[in-house]
Structure formats: structure tokens, C-alpha cells
Amino acid sequence: MTTNATSPVRYLNPEGSCPAQGLYSHVGTPDGKLMFIAGQLSVGADGGVVGKHDFDAQFRQVFSNLGDVLRGLGGDYSNILKFTTYLVHSQDIDHFMRLRAEMFPQFFGDKDYPPNTLLTIDRLVKEDFLIEVEATAYIGE
Image 1 (spheres, rainbow, N blue to C red):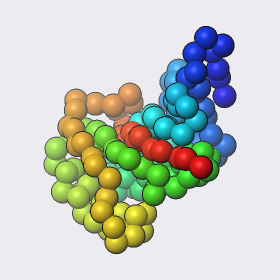
Image 2: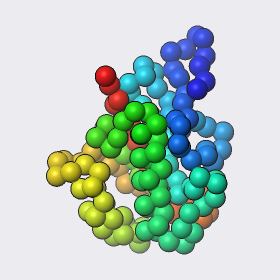
Image 3: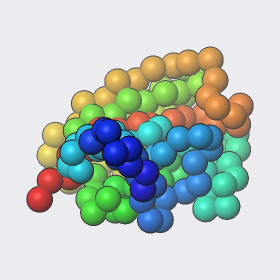
């Protein structure tokens, strides 16, 4: 955890989260309850890319990593307020929708799902990454 004596903002790298792929923290929080979670990538515990050229494998790893961050903060998927999803290839949108329909009931049950903004972009931090998902969560008392 990093803190600045003049700012209430804290930066966290929760226990169990994968290694960051640059100079950033996994989470920023102004109050210890509202959590801004950095985009999660398809990164294994060793820091390497999981599922090179395999969108389905990367989707699963990204959401596994997001779950690890949430658990490290003392929460779970029910704490998610909003997602922002970045895809490198527009042709993966159908794969994304299929995997959401398959996996989100496991994460959220049969309730409504959090808002999601879906963007297609030129590339991510490494060319091997196909998807990145960032989230905002509230982990109250």
C-alpha cells in the first residue's frame, strides 16, 4: 500500500493479485470503500501472457484476475458498480457476449448485471493482449 500524507487517496495491490504490467497499482481508493480497479489483463501469476491468440482463455483469465483483486479487497463480484471493457478486435464482440452470458450468472446470480461500457481499440499495452477490463467497486462495511 502507498499513501501520501497530503492526500486521502490510497493505492493498493491486494494479496493474490497478478503482477502489474507497468508502473501502476491495481486499485486506487479515496475512502477505503469506493475502489477504482485498474484494467485487468490476461496475466498469469508469473507475469506472462495467458492464452496468447485465444480470446476465450484471455476472457477467463481477465475475470479470474479481477476476482482475485476483489477477494484481496475483501469483496467479490457483487461489489462491482461498473465495468469498462476494451477489445482489440471488433470480431471478438460476439465471443465477449457469449462468454458473458455463460459466466456472469456464476458471478452475479440471476440478478441484473452492472453497467458496462464496451470499446474496441487499436491495441493494449502488449500486442498479445486481446481484452482488458477495468471496474469500479464499492466495498463497504
